[in-house]
Length: 136
Image (cartoon, rainbow, N blue to C red; front, top):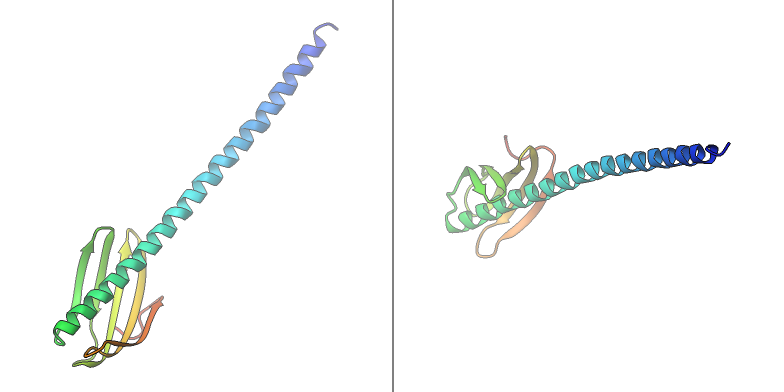
């Protein structure tokens, strides 16, 4: 009977240790999931910035030369952006479609330009799931 309290203590320590280990394992799994979500969010945000960078580059090029036709891929510091062929001609009613890419993440932007010069006028600038104004 003298050793029984030691067994109770040992079983209590083992039980508390098992609870602590399962809690630690749960926290590790949650941490990994949170990290993956954070990386996906970062990639998505960067892909959007890349697409918008392409649109801004196209607008600058069009203001310099209305004959600029786009249809190029630009390598950026964090990913790339693809500029599709620019729709329309001349100074008015132009369509710009750009796709930003970071790893496997893709974001698309369509822009309808009312006028390029003397002051640039944008009718619409929106993110889209699939291009409707341009052929991909």
